[in-house]
Structures are given as structure tokens and as C-alpha cells.
Image (cartoon, rainbow, N blue to C red; front, side):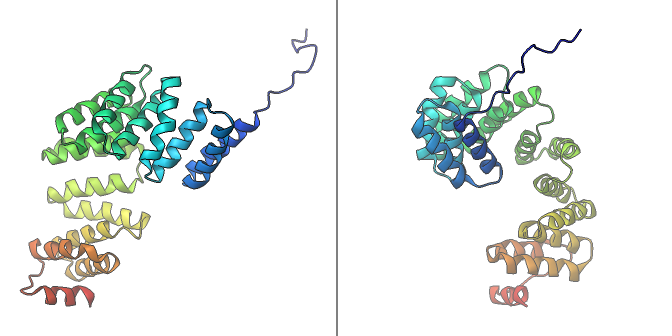
Length: 282
């Protein structure tokens, strides 16, 4: 016997505002915050109680570093919804405008929600670290990883904090775990290369940095660090060329380049800054 309903059921069509917010979300994903802001603001103007529109508007404004403007819609949305995603955005907005105590309080509330929302732990850890409260930041990130073991951004931030304490073994462990999930993330490869460089593993570090430069040809910092590794490996011409290219792309790396040349066992030392500048420009 057929179990189909006696009458056809019409599919529920999303409303015009829902369709608009889908476009806004897509625009955010495509890194077009201005477009997302415009769409979300129009929906919110028509319906001041639309929490999703307020969230997307706040997120679009944050992507444009307009934290003060993002605060008002996010505060209203957070009061209506008690949604940890919105509370996390609000915490980021408070931090961006220098309201650190309010930011940390908001993020504590977000991390206390259940089911847990991993990005709240990440943002909490980042803001605590920026405030110089490293032990608390590590505790927040470790707590978040207890709920999301494969959260690569939390692993990256926690690795950076361990590196500040010169715990290179733990930093390496976290970065290798993150790279198993996201093997082509340039930031993770760069961070692991930094650990390897500190441990004197220049060939291994150079291998990671070559991958970073292949993925991001305009990453001058990675190119400069690659040059440093090549110098230590005895590939002087290639190392100097890599450092020279990096400083030509980003002149603010000049001091870092001179330091890399000076401290390398196969580097160069210049008595006059003008001579160093001439060498790097040549």
C-alpha cells in the first residue's frame, strides 16, 4: 500500500529575507563584507528583530575593523538569542574597541554555553594572550581542544604560546597534529618551520618554507626565513638571493634580513648600513 500523502505537499519556499541573508552569508564567505553589510542592513531595517541579520551585519562590520559600529546590533542580537556564536562576535567587537574587560566577560559566557562552541574558546584564548595573560590563554585553548580535538586554529594559537615558553616539543606536537588535518595551511607550515629552525633542522624547515612560498608567492617573511635556512645549509648564493628578493618585496624586512645574514654561520657582516642596503638592492 502506498504511503504517499493523498495530496501533494508543496515545498516550503524561503522568504525573501531568508534568501537575502543567504546572499549575505555567501558574500561573507567570498570576502565581500561591504556587500554583506548592505544586504544585512536592508533586512534589519525591515525587521529590527531579525537576529540572523544582526549577526551577519556585525560580522561584516568586524571584517572591516569597524568594531564600534558592530557592537550595537550584536548586543541586541545577543540579548535576544543567547547564541554563543553571536556572543563570540560581540566579544571580538568589544576587544576591537578597547573594552577588554567586557570582551573577556562576554567570551567567558560564550565558552560556558552547552553544547560547546569551539570558536568561542579560540577567541577567548586570543584575547587573553593579547592581554599578556598567557597561562589563562593556554587553559582556555586546552579546554576548547577538549571539545574539538581537531580544531587547527586552536592548536596553532596554543603552539605559539608554548613557543613563547620555549616548549618547542609541545609546540611541534600541536602543529604536526594540525597539519594532519590541514596539510596545506601556509600558517601552520610556517609555524612548524620556525620550530624546526630553532631546533637546527634547517633542511626540514626549508622544505616547509618552500611549500609556503609555492602556496603564497607573495609571502616575503617565509621567503626571508627560507633564505636563512639555505645559508645555514651552505647554499649561500641561493640563500642570499632569497633574502634579497624578500627585502625588495617588503623593505620593512631590511633589519630582519641583516640580522639573518649576520647570525648565520655562513652569512655576511656589514660595517656600514649603506653597504648592507647596497648588497640587498643589488
